Image (cartoon, rainbow, N blue to C red; front, top):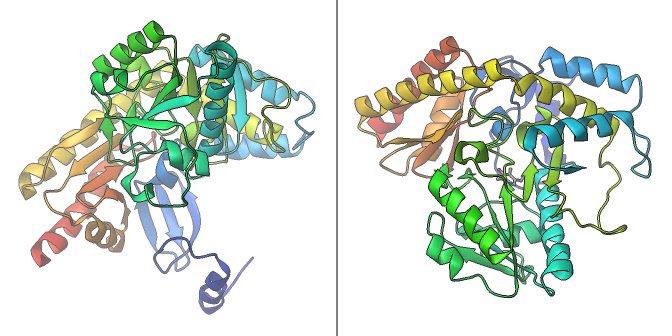
Length: 399
Ligand SMILES: *Cc1c(COP(=O)(O)O)cnc(C)c1O
């Protein structure tokens, strides 16, 4: 549908206000690039919040969508469909999990994980229902996943929260152990806390947590919604630590841009009974076909090696920029990196960078996060650094 700019700005009034957004609308994208309503072009290092793993509009997704749209879009979750069963098999094989439940958003997958832990506690641990999560964690925006999150801004919202979540401190095993009791069903964490500002659980902590949860007979549930699907340079971030969880959730990059998420579990943890879990759009063949195409493309040694190589390059460029401008350290893994600023100028930098045609994100006021397409090129990284440097010069010169 075509519209004049005036019409477009008027139409924005119909959008429920939930956050402040810049006065523009994106119209099309290709690879690392996005074009707005005035045909201004932006280099996109946000990529839908680490969603477009293969960049904007990859031919592979367009093809999978088109082929499947002409074959079967939906046949009701009351029946198996070919795409969903093939996709479940491949996802299970790639992750080392046994069972896959397909969902439409990360929060929905985590909500399913929380229910699974409660069902598992009811069945195997005498009604245990508590889940230990972590300070500053982010697990989604449904009521239960907000309750599971440890984001400080969520603390006072939508009371009363869903009960049963106890918060430990990341990389502090004793803080977890102190919370384990007969009511504990599971421990749930992100391998790298993305929204908290790219704060990693150390590999040693993940291994210790695996041993601790096994010793106490409670589930280890890993939220790989942001870190999974190659984002950290391995297919799943917990592979870096050599840890196999009992439950894993995936989303964001899983569908390469389309709404697709998944709840995965080992045979031992997978204990839903008929009626416990479901949903109208869950496992629809249209999204499953895309997921299958994306998984086949990303689960490839050369593809993942390239993610690691581009990560080394982006990190080095950010470190150089940091040294030149007296900023803080770079952290993260793969193509989920953050640059610490030594002052709270993240929001101004995001705006200034956008004016220079670069999209970045500041999950915390003193921090920039970089989540380019996993297919980003060196030339695009160089280009992003030039734009960021221009923005930095303006913002730090003006404070
Ligand atoms: C984005 C995210 C979620 C929520 O996913 P939605 O698709 O936005 O519901 C949950 N956990 C983590 C770690 C995330 O990054």
